[in-house]
Structure formats: structure tokens, C-alpha cells
View 1 (cartoon, rainbow, N blue to C red):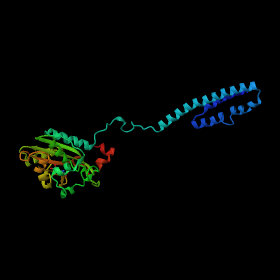
View 2: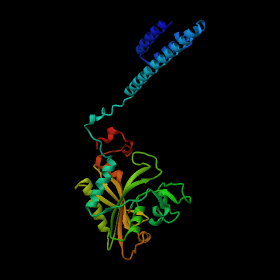
View 3: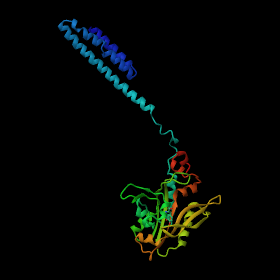
View 4: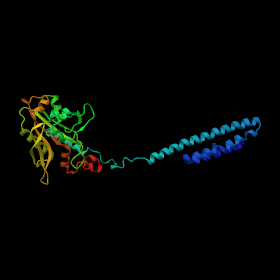
Length: 332
Ligand code: DAH
């Protein structure tokens, strides 16, 4: 019996070494340690032996069993590691496959436009200011001379935020509320632009998105005139689009400016594209911002930033800017 067990250990060692996967190891474990295994059969026949021989044989059987368990456990560690490595290899993402590291990522075309606009205005002596995207009703409407229930509020499909009194908190519908915040935060002279994200409950189509960008401008100083405004808008357009761009101002209405105008540029096909609203800051708005309209005057404008990007790059669908398709974005 002792000899048999030595041979059994040798056979078992070879069998365990030959097994190539965890399922196979499970099967061999059953054969070596299960009910009808050699060690268990031998244990059952111990009763036939004399007491002393039985003791010895029993001890030997325990040793062999421990030895077999150790063999199996060691092999399991090896096979489990191999299996993990195989899974990792199979699920590996080759991140070098794309572009092969030769082309770097770059800023989104909207961000590029945003930064270019800032550069142009900073070059003209403006500072850059920002305000919150979640606004109160006062800054978005009231301070901008929209009386309560005034029909002009309907020009904006406002998204309200469930916070405070109903209707008191909203996602800003334009960047104009930042004008008020700039006036509140310091004395004129003010020469500021205020770029940012704005929100309206619009259905997305080629010219509308529920989230888009504007760049607001505000100038407040002594004796600012409509001519200063027209000159600034024209200088900006030429800096952004190039020398031979034609623009025009067309009378319009906004509660926060008086007089108000719309700023259009001439497209290749001879049609005019509306790019901005603008006007002389209404005295009520200066007052809401804490400034004395007898001393100060100013002009303001608000451009659609995304539209500027579309125009400059000849893109015909606003939605393309937000789909984030790498093949599209990499062109700019
Ligand atoms: N806030 C206006 C809008 O969202 C745009 C605008 C018009 C801004 C006239 C101005 C302005 O500053 O003077 O449609």
C-alpha cells in the first residue's frame, strides 16, 4: 500500500502539471480527492488492518492527501493567473490605434470661437466677465426692464428651476443679466464682454438648440453715442470675418435698449444674416445696475456665438457643433 501511494503521488503530480485550464483542474480534483479517489478507497479499507499498521497507514494517507491538496492549490494559482491574463489580453483596448499618436487633440470649434472673440475684444480694450448660468428672475428680466407679465418675456422660452418661489429661479435665457452684475460690481467706465452658455426650451433644428452660446458686450462711460456702438460692431466684424464684410443696423426692439437695433451681415448669396441685437442701454437698466443715467450712458450688444462659428467656417447645421463627432470636429 505504501508503494502504491508513492506511485499515486507521482502520477497525480504529472496529471496536475499536464492540465491546462481551471475546468480540467476541477475534474482532476474530483478524481484525486473525491469519493472514489485512491485515497478515499484506501481509507475505507483501513479497517482491515491491525491496529498498529492501521495507525501508520492512516498517518501516511493524511500526508498524501495534504500533498495532493497542495499540488492542486499551486496549480490553481498558476491557471487562474493565466486565465486573468488571457481575459485582459482579449479585452485590451488599443488606445494607440487611433491616430497612432501623430495628431493631437484640439479645442472644440465653439471654444476656439469663444477664445478668438475674447482676443479681439481684449485687443480693443475690453475686459471679460462671467455670470451664473442659473439666474434669478430679477437679473434675467426685471432689471433689464421687462415689466412683470410684459409680452416681451414671451420672446424667450424660459426654463425655470424648481427652487424658491415658483418662477423666481431660471436658466438664463441670454447673457444680458451679466450686464447688471457687471454694473453692480463696479463703477464705470465699463468696457466688458460677457461670453457664456444660455438656455431656452427650444427644439433642436438647423438654427436652434436648447443650449447655445452668446457673447454680450457692455460699454458704459460719459457721452457714449450710437455712433460709438456702430463703429465698435463694425470694427469687431471686420476683425473676426475679414476686411470686406458688409454689415448693417436695422431698427428693432428690446426692452433693455432704446433705441434698439439688429446687426446683420451680408452673406455670399446676397441675403442678410442676423448676428446680434444691440442698442443704447435703457436708463431704467442703468438705474437697476445702480448707475445714474444723468451721468452715464452706454451701449450693449449680444451676439450668437455659435452663429459666428457657423458663419466663419461655412457650417450649415447648428446641431453639428454639439454632436461631437470626431470626424466633423477634427476639420476645424
Ligand atoms: N439678449 C438679447 C437676446 O438674447 C440680445 C441682445 C439684444 C443683447 C440687444 C443686447 C442688446 O445686449 O443690447 O436675444
